[in-house]
Amino acid sequence: MTIQDKKEALKKYQWICCEVKRLSGEILRLQSIAERATTVLSDMPKGGNRESRPVEKSAIAIDKLRNILRTEQNRLITERLRLMGAINSVEDDRLRSVLNLRYIEDFTFEKIAVELEISYQWACKLHGDALEKILLT
Image 1 (tube, rainbow, N blue to C red):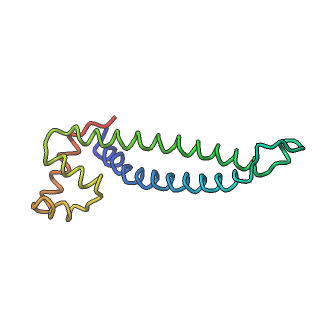
Image 2: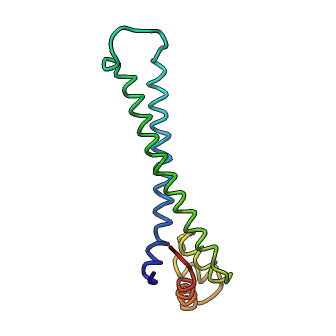
C-alpha cells in the first residue's frame, strides 16, 4: 500500500464518523415515525386484507429501512475501529500522536505543531514517518 493509499484510507475516518452520526439521526427519525404510526394499530381484528392497511404497511417498511440503516451503521463502526486499531498499533508515541491528531481529531499540521510544541516542518516530517510505519490492510 502506498503512502497516498494510506492517507486516503485514514481520511475515511472523519467521513465514517459523520456518516455514523447521520445514520443514527435517521434511525431515530424513522423510529419516531414508526412509533407514531404504530400507536394507531390495534390487536382487534378488522375486516379487509393486509393491502388495505396503509399504516401497518408503512410501519413494516419503516422497520425494514431501520434494519438496513443499522446494518450500514455497524459496518461503518467496524471500519472505524479497524482504522483506530491501525493507528494505535504504531509503536512510537510521537508518530501515533501525529496520526491521532491528524486523522481522529482532524487537526491541521499547524495545530499539530502547536499541540506537540514542534515546528510545522517537523510535524509534516513526523506525519510522513508515521505513514511509513502504519500497517493498513
